Length: 99
Length: 136
Image 1 (spheres, helix red, strand yellow):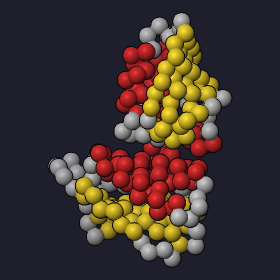
Image 2 (tube, each protein chain N blue to C red; image 1 turned 180 degrees about the vertical axis):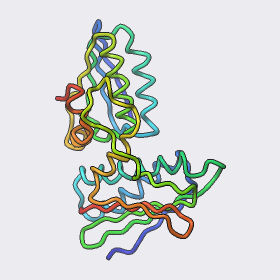
Image 3 (cartoon, each protein chain N blue to C red; image 1 turned 90 degrees about the vertical axis):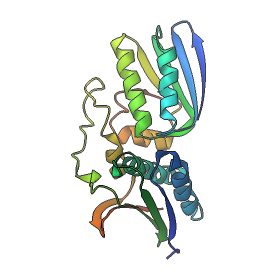
């Protein structure tokens, strides 16, 4: 998994590439923990990632809770077929903003 | 029926890449869609993580994955000789709750059930045996 970020004021975009699995999910969690303070709009770009296991969903759910608690929002962009399936099956497509 | 392929490794989280490669390579020969391939690998990740984390509380142990494809149906069996545990017995999480009410855990096995056609648990010959089947 590779992560690249773009920050523009209170907006943060994280491009996720590769697979978010049990072994890589902590990396995503760490990056978000470091970058999230002060962020009001978080975009997670999944154009290059179609594999997010439950370990990754936990990170997304935690992040969503953090963002809502601080009055911000989170969007998942460029969600592919496999990831959309996972989100729909777990009902998380209606929780997160998905595009 | 394809010849059954077997991977036997120490049941450690660090070996997960090998497990996922084993599942991916086995079905690659059958021209699977990327989505089916991902679903099978992800289902195996969820099951294997449980074994690596919980099967051997006292220390080291092994895990074995047996895979085959028969009439377009992939079958993978994950076996361990650890503590008897049926992960399928757990009630499914409520996936209709709002984000704030959602629990962080409990999604993995639920995902397995939704990603494959069949999932079965048996305790036989002193081993946990989890079987997943999916039409390719």
